Amino acid sequence: MPFSAASPVTAFAMRYTTVQAMLVLVTLALPSTVLAQNASRAEKFEFSVYPLLTQSKNYQSSNGASADLDNGRGLGFAWGFNVDNQWQVGVEVEWMSADYIATATPGQGNPGPNSTFSSTLETSTIRVAGTYHWNAKPTTLFFTGGLGFTHTDTGIPDGAPVFACWWYPYWGEVCGVGQPTKSQTDFSYNAGIGLRWDSSSSGFFVRGLFNRQWVDFGEAAGTIYYSQYRVDFGTRF
Image 1 (cartoon, rainbow, N blue to C red):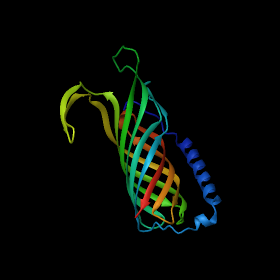
Image 2: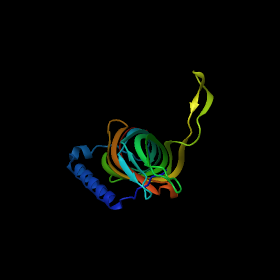
Image 3: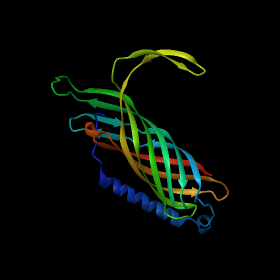
Image 4: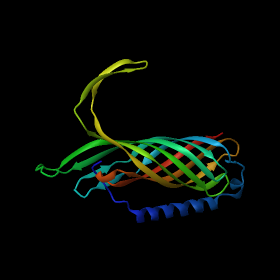
């Protein structure tokens, strides 16, 4: 990845605190009858699927290269085990795609001008996640964090086009030209805050959260973060 951006810790802290305060107020404002329902999570597995929205972002690097990333959309799956009504451990897998416009600057010894191009950024992430629920009630504030790896495909050509054929189930042999693109897999981590509701009459639950994911691209771009929003729809069993 040729782009980098400094992680604005202060801005994140302010947003995180604001979201936390809003969710606490919502929880306190809910009727006591809703909070008193019985929907135990303890010692139960759960599975959920969630749409994912990644907020648009501008990257600037020290050498003048830049990229404007559009809002990204994706899909994720989460599997977890509730140790008790408050602690949960699990695994999450998600995919995201976003269009972007970038400016590449000439390297050392290159007298050429800047080059502007458009492409699509695609990422896939797998992580181990831990979640703490603020209380054991069906409606609760929660905090989550995780560690994993993110594979990033920049869509930037990384070699000559290759003609090849592939055999697919049901379709048979398909031939075409493929273009290798610049991609890499890096360490990533995340932290999030949200609100969850569990049904007392079934295993259904829904939760919404604000999440921030950091990806360590190494010396090429440093650590870059993404702000994400998601709503999980799942079931306990």
